[in-house]
Length: 332
Ligand code: NAD
Image (cartoon, rainbow, N blue to C red):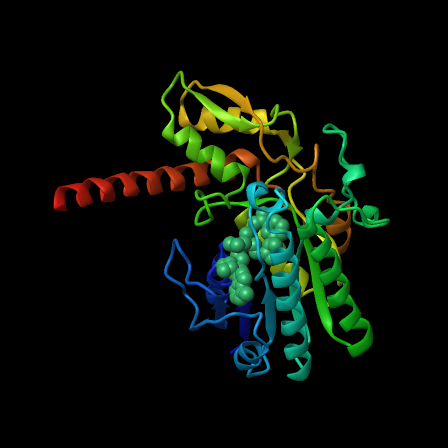
């Protein structure tokens, strides 16, 4: 039986990846500082541990896993990454995790490691035009990410690839672009745009205005979780291509369009109230030429399909929360 370690298994993408590996018949160990908030883990073994601690890393990497997926990071939506208040934590925590895991894998002679970088490492100056952003993999240098989160990703990409060169490892590096779907963070400040807008729309009544950060003309593409997982396992199992490569959708929309699609799914007619807020770059889209060339595959699910699934999951969470609140009031 093949074995896999998923670091960050208590998180959104890690939780889905564990399910996928279990469906394939793997023995899976998950590790995270927290349990998954929205679903029972399907991992055979789940370790609660802090990967900033070298001893924990050595303990969880106690066997020669066939595959290691390193997704653990200090992470968040624009409200967490772009305010500047968490820069030192983000850089210190994520870089320490990557340094520890990679070295522990090397010592165990584990070669196949997947690392999730982010589109946030692309230079800001190539993403000023919302209708024509450049996120071709080769445009990464000269580097100029607009956040310390992006700089840490860039450092760690280079770290993994240097272990390939110097120690003959087979690390694979992907640059994820805005992944969304059920069982992701949808409230509390760390949620991303699709989840935040699904929640706001689900809470609104027809005729209400929902709050949008900025003028809403900033563009992005959003990748549904199932396709993210597909791209991830395909890349790790590729015999020779190490990346970095974009794993994202190339269906670019403005945030205003995203709101309209979600409002349409909900059947509500809503206005938009544009307010000040942290924004990130003006435009971003996944350039999928390299992934098509190297993997012979690229995501192609229409955005609307993934949003339907996500909207219905978030609506169900809200309903469950309000039922629980009523029950608490009845008991009080
Ligand atoms: P997530 O926050 O849901 O998952 C990350 C997990 O890492 C969390 O469960 C967190 O508890 C865990 N973690 C953080 N610090 C840890 C520590 N010290 N020890 C052990 N576990 C720790 O985020 P996600 O959306 O699932 O993202 C997974 C990876 O993909 C991250 O590396 C992220 O930077 C990258 N990524 C995600 C997106 C996206 O849109 N979701 C986009 C680009 C890159």
